[in-house]
Image 1 (cartoon, chains in turn yellow, brown):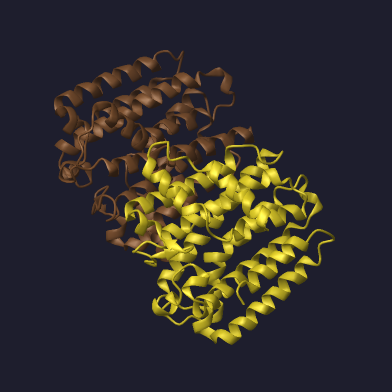
Image 2 (cartoon, each protein chain N blue to C red):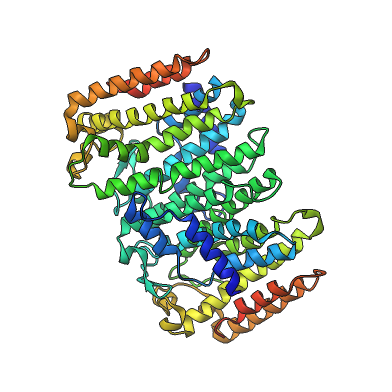
Length: 289
Length: 289
């Protein structure tokens, strides 16, 4: 896992423009937002799904980077005062605190564009048509029918009590879409797609995405700011509906554990190579538990 | 020109999710931001450049739409309080005034993703590798080495007196990059690229981009809010350096006129079909003059 985290860190470092290029302050802030922090869960999922289909690690680096860039952009925008107004992220001041709001806005926008540049600027798979489909998959996962749409639902839900299905709908978009795309994009790097069951892998991606958010809700309610590297207990403070406010900590933990088992059961249907994805699943679901 | 504006309007209407899809408020705001306004200069440039190389109008619709979506996202973010804090745009309240700041942020982000979805989700040219290059061109034009980078330089320049070369550097990024990409992307829709001189067309794109910003600066200093559909005199009020503050209205007009002649001279080097691009050039440079 450490080796993969190192790989994506190096690839991101390479992709992000250096501060010697104008505008220096923007490029410095982009690097601040992306490098040296985060568990890189989305890249790790892409690497592990790619490994399952024998994709070349070299091809996966840019795919993994594009996913992390989209994730990083969403964090920078999500932290802005008009959104969650968070001051800490990954153990350090958020971009708008360290720089300023306008720069944070442009950092998010620039990382967003850079993600698509990473995914289209080089041949990553033999079939260019499939690479186009990968870019379209990422765009759909990031946009109003995916992650950004989930954020909008999240905003509308402040102060409301959501049912479990409503909560699931929100999280399937907000967090689930990009987690799912991470698995899809990794798998789409296969030399031949015929060899694997994309649909099965996608079922795994959906379960992992939902579980990831569940665990996040529990952590937000229980952990300390030091452990999580961001302001905790914020959800309750912001009057945001979460799994924990909907069904309590204990039932949330139980749900997470069931989802984890279900995801692992899906992986067992693959004839070979699901070990790393399995380890990663256990890592996601049991993080600080 | 009206026919082309109608084409891109219809294509955008088709691309933008309907309000019957959740999240309804976000989708409503996205449509508000994009539809029913604007001169569609970037789409018109893509259509005209495409015509020059005999590209099929049907293929150009999505290319034109992706350019307008990037432009629209940048306007929505640029109007936010932490940026230019504009309250009027295209003759109506800006998105954050009509909706709210958080929604405006997500509208910009969603349009940004949708632009890349439009450009990658369907086969637009026979050669998928070239289509990937088109997406990469758009990403580079939008990102920190293009439009977003230009915005950052713009922010840093408030209250400063820039030299003409510094001003040109800022505008080549802020406005020029996307105008230039509009011409490039239209041209890249050609059945065969060998038939045209992409480099020559790119020289035209650079001139048009710079000229467009020059004319915009003069208009901001001189027009009425009613004519321009957005708050005017804002640049001076915001203490922003422009061509007009740098060299005055008269010399700015003269520079624009020289750039226009130069751009038209480039077009004359094409054996056939540069008429529409020529008309468009005159339209851009003489808009309300």
